Length: 108
Image 1 (cartoon, one colour):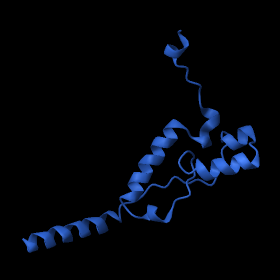
Image 2 (spheres, one colour):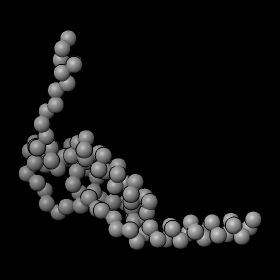
Image 3 (cartoon, helix red, strand yellow):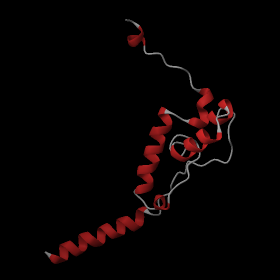
Image 4 (cartoon, helix red, strand yellow):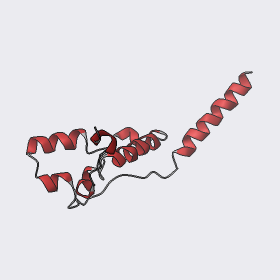
């Protein structure tokens, strides 16, 4: 029984080390597009600071990653979270959004 546990443990270690070599996609860009929220609305410094600190990491095209993002499978989880967040709201492409109107809520 102990041999099986050691083999399973060794297998998990090999897999964990192996996935560290899988390439990671980083959500980083040096350019600030003209469609960026801050460029369009010229937000006050306190609002700009608040949004960049609290929201821009997941909701823009430039993420400031924490140290633990270098470890798989955390990087995969964060990549999925960031992609999902950017689908809902992307401050870097804010000027390109079209307003969606919910027809059901307007009929009443």
